[in-house]
Amino acid sequence: RLLAGLALLVSTDAIGANAKPDSLRILNGMSWGTYTHALPLLTLGKELIKRQHDVYFASFGFYSGWAKEVDGLKTIDLGGTLPGHDHFLQTLVELIDHTMAWPSEMFDHLDEMIFDDYSRLYKVFHAAISGESLGGPPMDVVICDFFARPCLDAAHALKVPFVVTMPTVDLYGKSRL
Picture 1 (tube, rainbow, N blue to C red):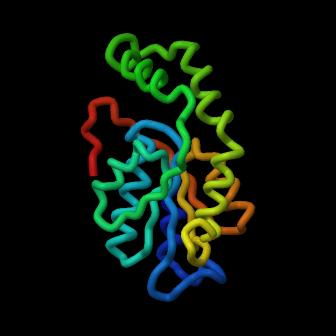
Picture 2: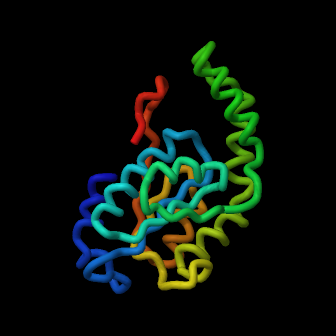
C-alpha cells in the first residue's frame, strides 16, 4: 500500500484538481504513538522536501522535536493533551524492558488515546487539510499513521487523496533518520 501511495506522489497527473506542476502541499499526520509511528512520516517528509514539496507534520506538540530532524518540515500542533499518553509510554517501556507481554491495562489507555479525543482532532485535521487553519489552499495529498483515524476521515471527507502508514519495529532504537 505504501508503495502504491508513493507511486501516486510521483505522478502529479494522478493527484487531481489541486495538483501544482512543481510542488505539492502534503500533510503527514499522527495523533499518538512512539517514534516508530513517526518514522515513516518523517522519512517520507524528508524525501518529499528534497523534491521541493511543501510538507507539514501534524502531531501533538511534544512530538515536534522529531520533526526538527527533518530540515524544512513544517509542524502543526494538534493542541490539547493526549489522554493516558504518559502512563501508556511508561507501561510500554516496562513491557519492552521486562516481560514482552502485553498487559491488559494498556488496552484501556489505547481506547482513551484513540477514541476519546476523536471529535476535537477531526476538526483540527479538517482545518489543516482544507487549508483553513494554514491560510492557504487545501493539501494535495495526506499521509496518515494508521492510528490517526481523524486524519484519515478528514482527508476522505475533503476528497483529498491519502496514504496510510504503519509503524516500523524498532525495539532496539536503531531506526533513525
